[in-house]
Length: 115
Image (cartoon, rainbow, N blue to C red; front, top):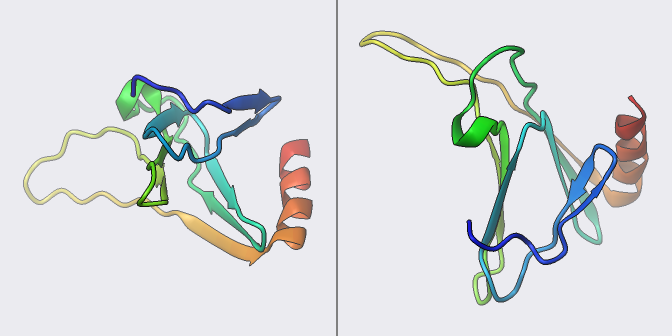
């Protein structure tokens, strides 16, 4: 999108954004894990990248979209590798969702960033 999130930050392997109440924003990355937190909860979505595979949207395996007011929501999207398919072909992709209380999730995030 034309506008990047106003508070887009990168610290090491961690990229963070906050929903902009005035503008829609969307970023893509080569992440294999997405994390969302509010004051109470932590959500982690794991969708590991396939090494050497081609991905859509300029190589993105993860995208974050934020919607402006009055519809206050975000979309956490995982993308799989591109594959040409023929009639009858099947493709499968697994995402793992982990939901926990924020305090427990913050400990998990610190460990994730160490690995």
